[in-house]
Amino acid sequence: MRKERGLLIVLSGPSGVGKGTVRKELFSKAGTNYEYSISMTTRAPREGEVDGVDYFFKSRNEFEALIEEGGLLEHAEFVGNYYGTPLAYVNETLDAGRDVFLEIEVQGAAQIREKAPEALFIFLAPPSISELQNRLIGRGTETEEIIKMRIDTARDELEMMSLYDYVVENDEIQNACDKINAIIVAEHCRRERIEKTYLSMLRGE
Amino acid sequence: MRKERGLLIVLSGPSGVGKGTVRKELFSKAGTNYEYSISMTTRAPREGEVDGVDYFFKSRNEFEALIEEGGLLEHAEFVGNYYGTPLAYVNETLDAGRDVFLEIEVQGAAQIREKAPEALFIFLAPPSISELQNRLIGRGTETEEIIKMRIDTARDELEMMSLYDYVVENDEIQNACDKINAIIVAEHCRRERIEKTYLSMLRGE
Image (cartoon, rainbow over the protein chains, first blue to last red):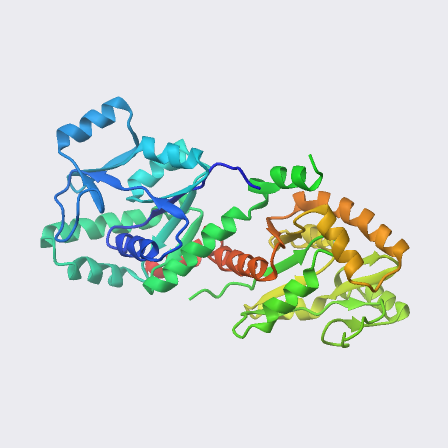
């Protein structure tokens, strides 16, 4: 019955908290009924990352051209690289009534909060600061200097929690995924989203 | 980590929508981590209903004495009978940090909305008015006159939807139960409920 617009779901959180891992786990299951919006970035692919699957990998020139044209829902520069969300795909999918799932950095999430306040904001939080440090070091892909920079950034990013609707602790990946799926189900039951359509139908209008 | 007060969960909806059936299904599963608060009523037990399990069955005099003492969180008179929620059990359970689940009539839910606005209000809605009529007739326990009265009441009760946080369609019992459980999980992740405790812990305070 509900011909509402799809829900824009924004998963974010501090660097190193495990956003990418959680997102991959969510989409590894059959029957996920929301669409993943692939981000665009100018950073180099990490081992195993595939263009058009993990990210759209672009040059700085290409990225800056898109910013100029207004072709990005949000974008941010982070540790010297651009990250952003192509706008057209998001709008088309939402208009078709399907949910769109974004996994982005906190700077980008803050921009969406302003442009699309009706979106659903989920903050993935680490169980502790020391756990976050371990994860950043354990990844083994960055230099010591970059790790320190990331930890400082992560502390600031934790304070951004107050801009979000939900906080999910990433203690275990499956726990976090279950909570995120529950949040999406619950949001579709929120009275203000469905009341009007529902009452019309019940009254036979 | 979270030593917050438990969540008061109120399931309500029009007469005949299947609140009791959904509630029983929810509590038939092992691992339900919220406590059921048994209502009190002056109506006669239906076949198979057990005192102290389905309801506390009381006389009008006993019930009115409890109202006088302020011993009820809410109470309502419905089709000539009183229904109410004993207050002491609810408060003790919430104070111990456990969630309490109430299944009550919409009149009672409206009273709780005023007294405990932080509670979580879930409206169980019928797929259609005719489906609601079928269920009221199908129950086979009431006279035609009472069924007509219940349907008129149910129409008015549907308009009360606007006082609720969530609307769950009772199309299939298991669907409705899954949604209710998702809503409870999601509410525990709401940022405003957990932000303060969480940030203190992360900062090592």
